[in-house]
Length: 181
Image (cartoon, rainbow, N blue to C red; front, side, top):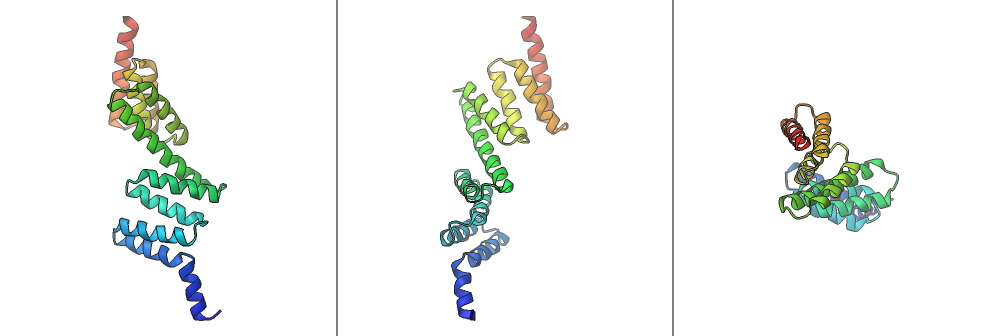
């Protein structure tokens, strides 16, 4: 294969775009990196690694919906890849956490928030924020035993977490008061 043929092949498979994306990341130009990763995906849409890299960059840019979309594409293209599954699950858990937070802050559907957070924890059992928010959601429902357990689960993940420890004490107190009445 001559030099021109190799160069054309190189330019057609997305590797050039991937290198440009990484160069953009090194320059802290994440929007430009996204553009380059998107070009690579367009050139080679069946390349799971390209979708994964694009997903990671979208996630770093707080574009969660797009990050999830490309994480799922990577998983579909390589269903046996545990790293892709872990990444997609973590992103979906983060999305559920954000959606549940809206439910709680809007004081609309705390029961729905509880279900979202349980699913988030199944997807990412190390997402301490989900345990903390679950404790708060249970507290909103006056289910202080479940709130206490959720806060304790957060403490198990990080024994020094100030908010988790504060919630444990708060829900211990509220549970005792509730049981006395």
